[in-house]
Image 1 (cartoon, rainbow, N blue to C red):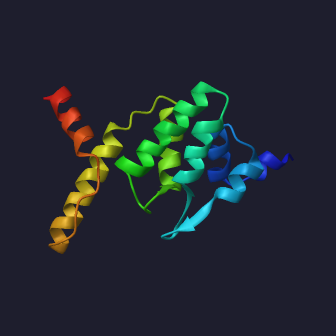
Image 2 (image 1 turned 90 degrees about the vertical axis):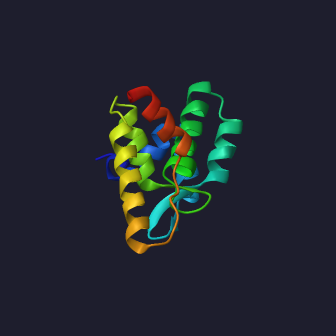
Image 3 (image 1 turned 45 degrees about the horizontal axis):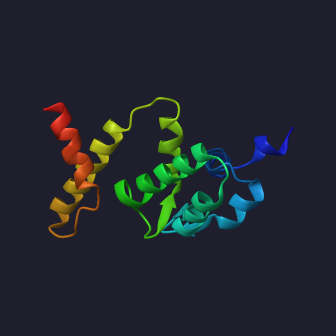
Length: 132
């Protein structure tokens, strides 16, 4: 068996998306709020230094998903976002996931009676305009 087969999924997905080595990704994975994540600073450094434009764009898009649309730990991109982003590359649409997460968060804020909705209002507005 090769070492790649035994690698944790998050590690493999980050290697695929960023185009960086196993060692580079491994030292940057952190544990925040009960889940694995990668700091925005590491992703930003990758965007600024990676030689492939396609990888730069992918890492930037992943960062937007993780920091703006589905933020969990401040300044970090969560493992679940990486999983969603990996599916996007396989032509799975994120619209239903975004709407489901928005509905879940709005419901949670309403039930508690306080709190705030953290999401991308501009993206939601854009979706509404394009569908209604």
